[in-house]
Amino acid sequence: MSFFTSLSGLKNAEMDLRVISHNIANAETAGFKKSSAQFADLVASGSATDPRRTAGIGATVSAITQDFALGPLEQTGRSLDLAIDGDGFFALANPVSGDVSFTRNGNFRLTATGEMQDATGNVLQAFPVDAAGNPTSTTPGNVIVPLTNGAGSALANVTINSRGIVNAAYSDGTTDPVGQIALATFAAPNGLRAIGQTKWQASGDSGAPVFGNPGIGNNGEMISGALERSNVDLAEEMVSLLTAQRNFQANARAIDTATQISQTVLNLRQ
Image 1 (cartoon, rainbow, N blue to C red):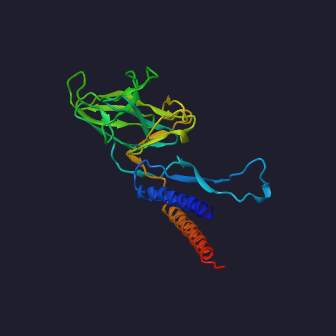
Image 2 (image 1 turned 180 degrees about the horizontal axis):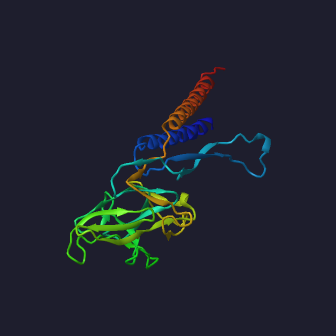
Image 3 (image 1 turned 90 degrees about the horizontal axis):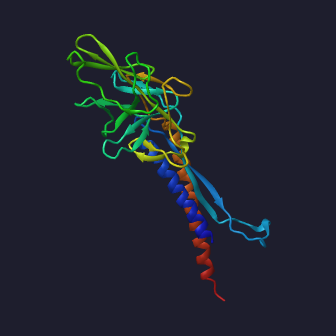
Protein backbone atom coordinates (compact mmCIF):
# COMPACT_ATOMS: atom_id res chain seq x y z
CA MET A 1 0.00 0.00 0.00
CA SER A 2 2.87 2.40 0.73
CA PHE A 3 3.90 2.19 -2.93
CA PHE A 4 0.54 3.51 -4.15
CA THR A 5 0.38 6.14 -1.41
CA SER A 6 3.77 7.54 -2.39
CA LEU A 7 2.88 7.21 -6.08
CA SER A 8 -0.11 9.51 -5.55
CA GLY A 9 2.26 11.99 -3.91
CA LEU A 10 4.59 11.78 -6.92
CA LYS A 11 1.71 12.46 -9.31
CA ASN A 12 0.57 15.44 -7.25
CA ALA A 13 4.10 16.87 -7.13
CA GLU A 14 4.35 16.41 -10.89
CA MET A 15 1.02 18.22 -11.39
CA ASP A 16 2.22 21.03 -9.13
CA LEU A 17 5.39 21.32 -11.21
CA ARG A 18 3.33 21.43 -14.43
CA VAL A 19 1.13 24.24 -13.12
CA ILE A 20 4.13 26.25 -11.87
CA SER A 21 5.98 25.69 -15.16
CA HIS A 22 2.90 26.91 -17.07
CA ASN A 23 2.86 30.07 -14.95
CA ILE A 24 6.57 30.73 -15.50
CA ALA A 25 6.28 30.11 -19.25
CA ASN A 26 3.54 32.79 -19.44
CA ALA A 27 5.21 35.39 -17.24
CA GLU A 28 5.36 37.78 -20.22
CA THR A 29 1.96 36.89 -21.77
CA ALA A 30 -0.39 39.89 -21.80
CA GLY A 31 -3.64 39.23 -19.93
CA PHE A 32 -2.46 35.88 -18.51
CA LYS A 33 -3.75 34.82 -15.07
CA LYS A 34 -1.67 32.47 -12.94
CA SER A 35 -3.01 29.15 -11.66
CA SER A 36 -2.41 27.13 -8.53
CA ALA A 37 -3.00 23.45 -7.81
CA GLN A 38 -5.02 22.47 -4.72
CA PHE A 39 -4.71 19.03 -3.16
CA ALA A 40 -6.79 16.86 -0.82
CA ASP A 41 -5.99 13.72 1.18
CA LEU A 42 -7.54 10.31 0.51
CA VAL A 43 -8.77 8.09 3.33
CA ALA A 44 -10.27 4.62 2.80
CA SER A 45 -12.23 3.37 5.79
CA GLY A 46 -15.51 1.69 6.64
CA SER A 47 -17.99 2.04 9.45
CA ALA A 48 -16.23 -0.72 11.37
CA THR A 49 -12.78 0.83 11.03
CA ASP A 50 -11.11 2.10 14.17
CA PRO A 51 -10.68 5.87 13.51
CA ARG A 52 -7.47 5.79 15.54
CA ARG A 53 -5.92 3.34 13.06
CA THR A 54 -6.75 5.09 9.77
CA ALA A 55 -3.48 5.93 8.05
CA GLY A 56 -4.87 7.23 4.75
CA ILE A 57 -4.03 6.17 1.22
CA GLY A 58 -2.44 9.27 -0.28
CA ALA A 59 -3.56 12.49 -1.94
CA THR A 60 -5.25 13.75 -5.09
CA VAL A 61 -5.71 17.00 -7.00
CA SER A 62 -8.89 18.66 -5.77
CA ALA A 63 -8.80 21.70 -8.08
CA ILE A 64 -6.65 23.90 -10.27
CA THR A 65 -7.78 27.47 -9.64
CA GLN A 66 -6.93 30.70 -11.44
CA ASP A 67 -6.07 33.97 -9.76
CA PHE A 68 -7.84 36.85 -11.54
CA ALA A 69 -6.01 39.57 -9.61
CA LEU A 70 -5.09 42.61 -11.69
CA GLY A 71 -1.69 42.40 -13.36
CA PRO A 72 0.66 45.38 -13.80
CA LEU A 73 -0.36 47.85 -16.53
CA GLU A 74 2.29 48.64 -19.13
CA GLN A 75 2.15 51.76 -21.29
CA THR A 76 2.55 51.00 -25.00
CA GLY A 77 1.44 54.31 -26.56
CA ARG A 78 -0.64 52.44 -29.15
CA SER A 79 -4.23 53.73 -29.23
CA LEU A 80 -5.78 50.31 -29.93
CA ASP A 81 -4.05 48.70 -26.94
CA LEU A 82 -6.55 48.64 -24.07
CA ALA A 83 -6.29 47.73 -20.41
CA ILE A 84 -9.14 47.32 -17.92
CA ASP A 85 -8.39 49.11 -14.66
CA GLY A 86 -10.66 46.94 -12.50
CA ASP A 87 -13.10 44.08 -13.03
CA GLY A 88 -14.51 42.84 -16.29
CA PHE A 89 -13.52 41.02 -19.47
CA PHE A 90 -13.47 42.05 -23.12
CA ALA A 91 -16.02 40.04 -25.13
CA LEU A 92 -14.88 38.61 -28.47
CA ALA A 93 -17.05 36.98 -31.13
CA ASN A 94 -15.72 34.32 -33.46
CA PRO A 95 -16.55 35.57 -36.99
CA VAL A 96 -17.27 32.04 -38.24
CA SER A 97 -19.09 30.27 -35.42
CA GLY A 98 -20.36 33.31 -33.53
CA ASP A 99 -19.13 31.82 -30.24
CA VAL A 100 -18.24 34.46 -27.66
CA SER A 101 -15.07 34.22 -25.60
CA PHE A 102 -13.67 36.53 -22.94
CA THR A 103 -10.21 37.96 -22.33
CA ARG A 104 -8.17 40.53 -20.41
CA ASN A 105 -5.74 40.93 -23.31
CA GLY A 106 -6.65 44.24 -24.97
CA ASN A 107 -4.27 44.07 -27.93
CA PHE A 108 -6.57 44.94 -30.86
CA ARG A 109 -6.14 45.90 -34.49
CA LEU A 110 -8.26 47.49 -37.21
CA THR A 111 -8.90 45.40 -40.32
CA ALA A 112 -9.34 46.59 -43.90
CA THR A 113 -13.12 46.36 -43.40
CA GLY A 114 -13.09 48.45 -40.21
CA GLU A 115 -13.56 45.62 -37.70
CA MET A 116 -11.69 45.74 -34.38
CA GLN A 117 -10.18 42.30 -33.92
CA ASP A 118 -7.71 40.51 -31.69
CA ALA A 119 -4.63 38.74 -33.05
CA THR A 120 -6.63 35.61 -33.96
CA GLY A 121 -9.45 37.40 -35.81
CA ASN A 122 -12.13 37.50 -33.10
CA VAL A 123 -14.22 40.68 -33.20
CA LEU A 124 -14.47 43.00 -30.18
CA GLN A 125 -18.02 43.52 -28.86
CA ALA A 126 -19.53 46.91 -28.01
CA PHE A 127 -22.89 48.60 -27.40
CA PRO A 128 -24.28 50.77 -30.23
CA VAL A 129 -24.36 54.50 -29.42
CA ASP A 130 -26.12 57.62 -30.66
CA ALA A 131 -24.44 60.76 -32.02
CA ALA A 132 -23.75 61.93 -28.46
CA GLY A 133 -22.02 58.67 -27.51
CA ASN A 134 -24.84 57.32 -25.32
CA PRO A 135 -25.60 53.57 -25.54
CA THR A 136 -28.85 52.80 -27.36
CA SER A 137 -29.00 49.07 -26.53
CA THR A 138 -27.95 46.62 -23.83
CA THR A 139 -27.08 43.95 -26.41
CA PRO A 140 -23.49 44.20 -27.66
CA GLY A 141 -22.44 43.66 -31.27
CA ASN A 142 -19.33 43.79 -33.45
CA VAL A 143 -17.23 46.96 -33.44
CA ILE A 144 -17.08 48.17 -37.04
CA VAL A 145 -15.44 51.54 -37.69
CA PRO A 146 -16.61 53.23 -40.94
CA LEU A 147 -13.60 53.87 -43.15
CA THR A 148 -15.25 57.01 -44.56
CA ASN A 149 -17.81 59.36 -43.02
CA GLY A 150 -20.99 60.72 -44.58
CA ALA A 151 -19.04 63.47 -46.32
CA GLY A 152 -16.71 60.93 -47.93
CA SER A 153 -13.67 61.84 -45.83
CA ALA A 154 -11.24 59.02 -45.05
CA LEU A 155 -10.61 57.63 -41.59
CA ALA A 156 -7.63 59.31 -39.91
CA ASN A 157 -7.40 57.54 -36.54
CA VAL A 158 -9.37 55.78 -33.81
CA THR A 159 -9.32 56.74 -30.14
CA ILE A 160 -10.96 55.18 -27.07
CA ASN A 161 -11.69 57.12 -23.89
CA SER A 162 -11.94 55.94 -20.28
CA ARG A 163 -15.68 55.21 -20.71
CA GLY A 164 -14.88 52.83 -23.54
CA ILE A 165 -16.34 55.06 -26.26
CA VAL A 166 -14.72 54.27 -29.61
CA ASN A 167 -14.34 57.52 -31.58
CA ALA A 168 -13.46 57.63 -35.27
CA ALA A 169 -11.66 60.79 -36.47
CA TYR A 170 -11.72 61.68 -40.17
CA SER A 171 -9.51 63.74 -42.43
CA ASP A 172 -12.04 66.62 -42.56
CA GLY A 173 -11.64 67.14 -38.80
CA THR A 174 -14.93 65.52 -37.73
CA THR A 175 -15.22 62.85 -35.05
CA ASP A 176 -18.00 60.28 -34.77
CA PRO A 177 -18.67 57.86 -31.88
CA VAL A 178 -18.83 54.27 -33.12
CA GLY A 179 -19.74 52.29 -29.99
CA GLN A 180 -19.07 51.72 -26.30
CA ILE A 181 -16.99 48.69 -25.43
CA ALA A 182 -19.01 46.12 -23.49
CA LEU A 183 -17.40 44.55 -20.41
CA ALA A 184 -18.56 41.15 -19.17
CA THR A 185 -18.61 40.09 -15.54
CA PHE A 186 -19.47 36.73 -13.98
CA ALA A 187 -20.95 35.62 -10.70
CA ALA A 188 -18.14 33.08 -10.29
CA PRO A 189 -15.16 33.90 -12.56
CA ASN A 190 -13.19 30.95 -11.17
CA GLY A 191 -15.71 28.75 -12.98
CA LEU A 192 -14.66 30.08 -16.40
CA ARG A 193 -13.27 27.48 -18.81
CA ALA A 194 -9.80 28.36 -20.11
CA ILE A 195 -9.51 27.72 -23.87
CA GLY A 196 -5.99 29.07 -24.47
CA GLN A 197 -4.65 32.25 -26.05
CA THR A 198 -5.60 34.06 -22.78
CA LYS A 199 -9.29 33.46 -23.47
CA TRP A 200 -12.06 31.94 -21.41
CA GLN A 201 -15.56 30.69 -22.10
CA ALA A 202 -18.60 30.81 -19.84
CA SER A 203 -19.62 27.54 -18.19
CA GLY A 204 -22.31 26.30 -15.84
CA ASP A 205 -19.94 26.96 -12.94
CA SER A 206 -19.22 30.58 -13.91
CA GLY A 207 -22.79 31.56 -14.79
CA ALA A 208 -23.87 33.61 -17.80
CA PRO A 209 -22.01 36.83 -18.62
CA VAL A 210 -23.51 40.12 -17.46
CA PHE A 211 -22.63 42.94 -19.85
CA GLY A 212 -22.10 46.46 -18.58
CA ASN A 213 -20.47 49.80 -19.30
CA PRO A 214 -16.85 50.58 -18.36
CA GLY A 215 -16.54 52.62 -15.18
CA ILE A 216 -20.04 51.72 -13.95
CA GLY A 217 -20.41 49.63 -10.80
CA ASN A 218 -17.60 47.10 -10.47
CA ASN A 219 -16.58 47.43 -14.11
CA GLY A 220 -13.14 48.93 -14.57
CA GLU A 221 -12.39 51.96 -16.70
CA MET A 222 -10.59 51.76 -20.02
CA ILE A 223 -6.95 52.81 -20.27
CA SER A 224 -5.98 53.40 -23.89
CA GLY A 225 -2.36 52.92 -24.93
CA ALA A 226 -1.68 50.27 -22.28
CA LEU A 227 -1.81 46.50 -21.81
CA GLU A 228 -2.32 44.40 -18.70
CA ARG A 229 0.69 42.16 -18.18
CA SER A 230 0.68 38.70 -16.63
CA ASN A 231 0.03 38.62 -12.88
CA VAL A 232 2.72 35.95 -12.39
CA ASP A 233 5.29 36.81 -9.70
CA LEU A 234 8.48 35.05 -10.78
CA ALA A 235 10.07 35.15 -7.31
CA GLU A 236 6.99 33.51 -5.80
CA GLU A 237 6.90 30.89 -8.56
CA MET A 238 10.58 30.01 -8.05
CA VAL A 239 9.98 29.37 -4.34
CA SER A 240 6.95 27.22 -5.21
CA LEU A 241 9.08 25.38 -7.78
CA LEU A 242 11.67 24.49 -5.15
CA THR A 243 8.94 23.31 -2.76
CA ALA A 244 7.34 21.10 -5.43
CA GLN A 245 10.77 19.66 -6.27
CA ARG A 246 11.38 18.78 -2.60
CA ASN A 247 7.95 17.14 -2.38
CA PHE A 248 8.73 15.06 -5.46
CA GLN A 249 12.08 13.99 -4.02
CA ALA A 250 10.53 13.08 -0.66
CA ASN A 251 7.87 10.88 -2.27
CA ALA A 252 10.48 9.25 -4.48
CA ARG A 253 12.57 8.51 -1.37
CA ALA A 254 9.52 6.98 0.34
CA ILE A 255 9.08 4.62 -2.62
CA ASP A 256 12.77 3.75 -2.47
CA THR A 257 12.50 3.00 1.25
CA ALA A 258 9.44 0.80 0.71
CA THR A 259 11.34 -1.06 -2.02
CA GLN A 260 14.26 -1.71 0.33
CA ILE A 261 11.94 -3.01 3.05
CA SER A 262 10.19 -5.32 0.60
CA GLN A 263 13.55 -6.59 -0.66
CA THR A 264 14.68 -7.27 2.91
CA VAL A 265 11.52 -9.29 3.64
CA LEU A 266 11.93 -11.30 0.44
CA ASN A 267 15.54 -12.08 1.35
CA LEU A 268 14.68 -13.46 4.81
CA ARG A 269 15.67 -17.06 5.28
CA GLN A 270 14.30 -19.57 7.65
